[in-house]
Length: 166
Image (cartoon, rainbow, N blue to C red; front, side):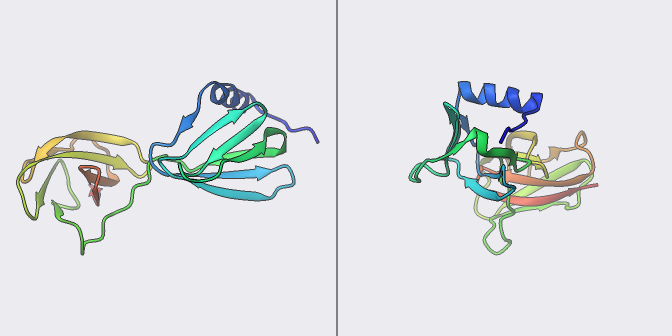
C-alpha cells in the first residue's frame, strides 16, 4: 500500500531525520496506521522521538524500550497541541496564592513561608509562555499586555495556579 505524504509532512520527516526531537515536558503522540488503527504514546521529558532509516523510533522514557514503527505503515502522526503539560496545583498543597483572580492589568502573589525571589512564568492554554521573570512575594506583576483569557502561572517550575485575565 502506498502512503501519501503532504509537503509539510515530508519537511517534518526530513528535518526529524537529521536530528532527534526531545520533548520539553510531556507530549502525547497518536500514531494512525495505514489500516486506520490508532495507538497513543505518552512521551516523558526523558523520552525522545527520532527517525532511524525508514523507521520512527519512540522512546517514551529513558528507562523504556525503544519502539520502532516503519514509516510506510504510518498514515498520520498527531501531537498534542503543546509539549508543555501544565496542570494546576491543588489548593490543598499549594504554598502560593495569586490575587486578584480574575485580574485586569496587575497581578500579585504571596508565598506561605517566605518572601524570597521566585521564577514566575505565565502560560496560555496552548502552553506558550507569555511572560516570565523573577519576582518577590507581594511584588506587582504587570500583565496589561496579555490578552483576556485563561492562563497558568508557574512558580519555580514547581507549582501552577490558574489565572483568569479580564
